[in-house]
Amino acid sequence: MLRPKILIADDHPLLLRGLEEFLKENNHVIIGTYSDGLSAYNAIIKEKPDIAILDIEMPNLTGLEIAKKCKRHSVKTKVILITLHREKKFFEQAVSYNIHGYLLKEFALSEIEACLESVSKGHAYFSDKIFKRFTNVVEEDNSIEKLTPSEVKILRRIAEEMTSSEIAEYLSISVRTVEKHRANIIRKLGLEQKPNTLLIWSQKNKLALG
Image 1 (tube, rainbow, N blue to C red):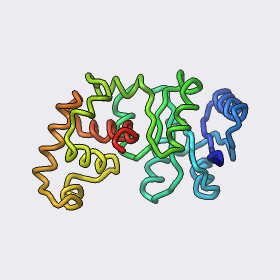
Image 2 (image 1 turned 60 degrees about the horizontal axis):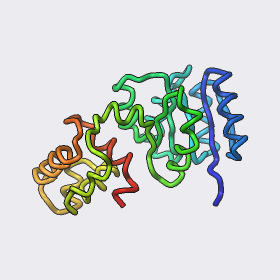
Image 3 (image 1 turned 120 degrees about the horizontal axis):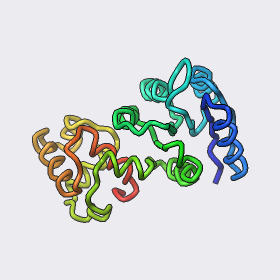
């Protein structure tokens, strides 16, 4: 299996060099490193890396702004964001831009290998420290067994970022029925009643959804 081509961008030279050296030591293919967001985004468009590991805060363009541009222009590069921020607003904004990974900097080196493996297989990876804190999971992941086949179908579509209206049309059911399913899923999984909760959970657990 071919190793994914990886681009890294961080405006902190020591962190950038440390991450690059760590990944190269583990036989990953690094096609470029950048210290500002605009250079990184231009390189993403030109070089088309499989994965871009981006600091959230950078000059010219932030990691979040790059993720937003990639989503808007349907860029196939999968974005992993690394950050010092623990605020919920940054995480939820990142998820809305369809990022594939979200890591806290202090755990980046210990989690990056698992993150890259997951993202390479098409599954999102969020640091457990962030995921558990912001989704307020009170059940184990095997609580998916409590869901009905219809609810699992709804979750699969949510993981694909489909709206309730799009899901209703896709499954030939009413929007009201979709919303009822969503409420039941949140209750059964023990999640917070928040707008992005199911999107975050479904992306995190794509493999379990089949």
